[in-house]
Length: 96
Image 1 (cartoon, rainbow, N blue to C red):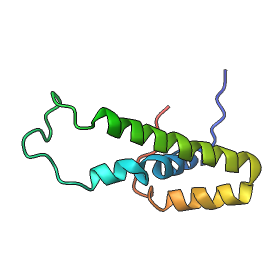
Image 2: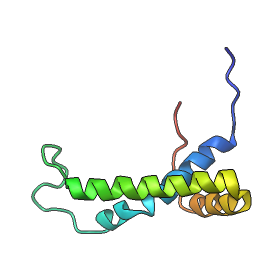
Image 3: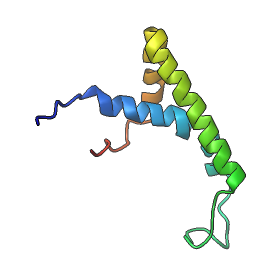
Image 4: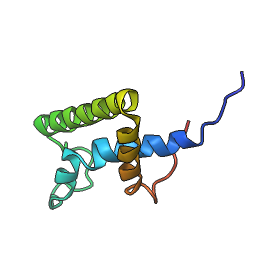
């Protein structure tokens, strides 16, 4: 089987992640102060169940709206992807 490479897909993936996660509730958590006791210690949870739920709900809602745009309003979707790409210029490309 031969894989067809879609050069735009890595950019689109990074834009979606930027919009769904980086610019979502997780950014609020990231912007806070580090815990002086547990920072870097993987034995401790760094995100509460309630925070994790907010992160995932926010991401699902954003991905849903982006997928809706892609299917129903391609110009709005392209504008959204362009916005997301502003945050990802230094990100690594995804690995398959």
